[in-house]
Amino acid sequence: MSILATTLVALIALLHVYIMVLEMFLWTTPRALKAFGLTPEFAAETKVLAANQGLYNGFLAAGLIWSLVYPVPGFAWQLAMFFLACIAVAGIFGAVTSSRRILFIQTVPAVLAMLALMFV
View 1 (cartoon, rainbow, N blue to C red):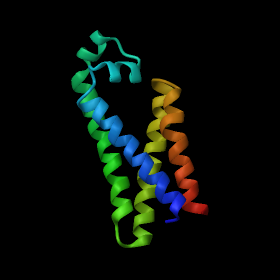
View 2 (view 1 turned 90 degrees about the horizontal axis):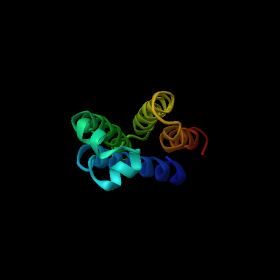
View 3 (view 1 turned 180 degrees about the horizontal axis):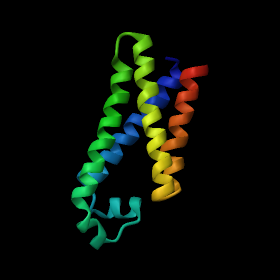
């Protein structure tokens, strides 16, 4: 992977670790309420659902980290492309069903990283 692609993959992995922490552990805190535009009441009611969602974001981050440390470059590339594609699709779904903002937070960075993996 190029330095640009590696950097983008690493940053997206870190973003998904952050999202995981917000959803699994900080869902009812002011930081998460602001980040996700939630009321305290809604956050309290959906805490278990958010933790489940956070776990999935953790899996996405783990897959990207795996791609960064895997010793065989060809397979590492495939891992990165697969997990970035999953993030891009999840971002599109989130943009359609929840908030258009998700498109710019998840899908655009994932697609940029995929392009860097393919062409840089």
